[in-house]
Length: 375
Image (cartoon, rainbow, N blue to C red; front, side):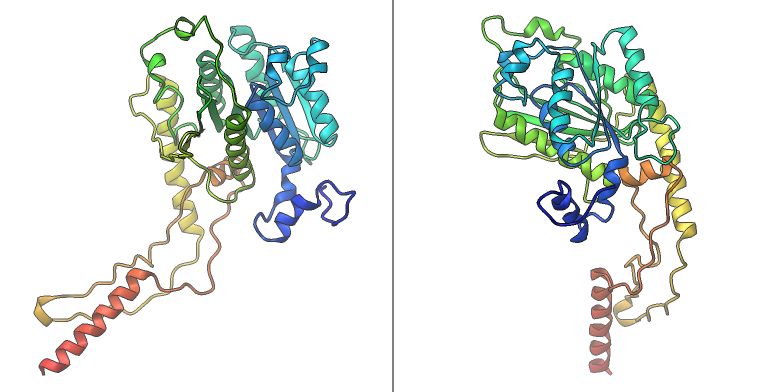
């Protein structure tokens, strides 16, 4: 459990202050969450550092590269790791255990794009999500997958396994020029998958290796990596703990400090048939969730119908929509529903009149005044 006592010896006091301030009501539940991070490079190494400092219960990390001195400009690795010829996963485990020994770190040093290793990854994501804080130690899926890979073959592998296991995941990347990047949230069936709106070279079937420059390596700025990783980690926390709004897609242009944010809907004709199947399942699930929530919610109070007016042949109808309770299916609620713990929205003691309702009432009063003057 996380201690909320404020003292210099408590590593969680500043984190638990967020709970005391009412921003996140359930922050201590972070200890029961498990996250898989695929790719522990410029973005991934910062993300696992963030999540470890935030007190995540378990981190399952995937990579197959070794630490090199060329990594020093953007990662938390040290020259000692490179001299010892450590894999990125083993080096990450060493550093993260020193930062927060409470976090369980599971390193996996293999290439996920081979058929054999793809099955290994799938089995790990499906069975190793249980944390040490879980009351029930039955094997379960991880709570979230975060992709920080630098090639499309690995993105395809993550996309496919998350479609198969119905796992929500974040995709991220930084451009070859190091001045732009992006983060995208993917929920099977509800949002676009990686194949719904792929990059041009993927859509055209071009081998990405064929367009890489041979005379110069890709540029890399720790600042760009850190900004993208910060957005990614923040949205991971929002998804896991159910606060704020999880972004659909956000880009970053470093030259103009421009952050375009757009929703990306699933492609009904996606080339991945499993994605199309998940879209149909999501539509049915969403309809069921909304119906159950509305059925469980208390019935709205009956109101007298708005008086009609024959003035100028106009009839006033209140279209404020107060009688129809709105229920939004968020990614967090969807995960709750999958875990069979969804609860209907709490009834408010007293609702403030909506802007549209006030407008109708004002219009009715104005018409009455006009009618009286005409009598």
